[in-house]
Amino acid sequence: MPKLSMSRRSVLTAGVAFAVSAPSIISARAAVNLRLTHPADAAHPVNIEAEAMAKRIAERTKGEVNIAIFANNALGSPTDTAQQTRLGAIDMILLNPANIEAMSKTIGVVNIPYQFDSYEHAHKTLDVTGRDWLAAQLQAAGFTWIANFEWGFRALTNSRRPVNAPADVQGLKLRVPPELAIKAAFEALGATTQTIAFQEVYLALANKAVDGQDNPVATTYAAKFYEAQSNLALTKHIYTSIMLAANPKVWNDKLTADQRKIVSEEATKAGAAARKTVRDNEEKYIADMQKAGIAVTRPDVAPFRDKMGPAYDQLRKVLGEDTWTTWAKFVAAARA
Image 1 (cartoon, rainbow, N blue to C red):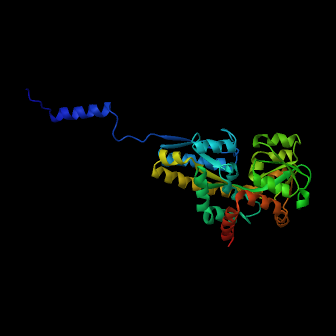
Image 2 (cartoon, rainbow, N blue to C red):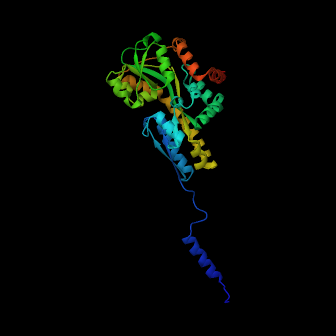
Image 3 (cartoon, rainbow, N blue to C red):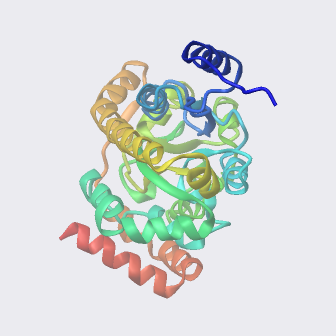
């Protein structure tokens, strides 16, 4: 049998040929492309900071994690997209806890009327005293919590009269989202409520199908609802959070530990920036709406809170006594 031999040069040549023709053993990780849905208008701070977050994540992961943002309910209603995210059809979502009440009754505690005294109080409850408990509720509902963003305290607009006291709300026909806490709060004040999809609110106001609506100031401003209203009351009846969450399988299986760390860091940074912008711009938005002709009132919230008994009874029954009591301790701890 002839003896086989290869020179050093032929070995190197063969190695080069193999490197060119075969897949590289050390190759870049395949890019992960994710979809993130949320209901905010493109001009809202939540969307602006989500877009900035996605850009920073792509840069830090060197293009390995790319997040496409779908704003303004482009992929469906908040409740529909929450269900799609839970099932894995959508990867990530910025959700109002009220949108998943059908999947988790306990998460509705976040929207109890008049429970928070200030932004600082709400933030400390969500970020510190109630954080672990909330994360567990979201996990049980089929979501991995990542970070808190912000809608803000809700304010009431209407086309009939200024609101300075609870009696001014009585008899108003108000659009509400499909959220029990908001509906219960206004009905406790004597208003009539009608559920209307967010995309249809402007037309309903313009056509006088309803007298008014409630949303955080930034949302009312971005959606231009004030154009069809004459009065804005800073009732601060409900603090509305918006939480960034992911489908657990997507979070754990599609992303590495390092990638999850980067996403969490950038999401927390984006959430903080959105909160700051919402608060910093609130008075500017109010001033702009006043220039457009809307009258603004800043009622004392105490008399409104005093009228919440029927709403609290209704919510306590839905949430359960244990949940109500547990959450009340987190709220009280944050206040202390």
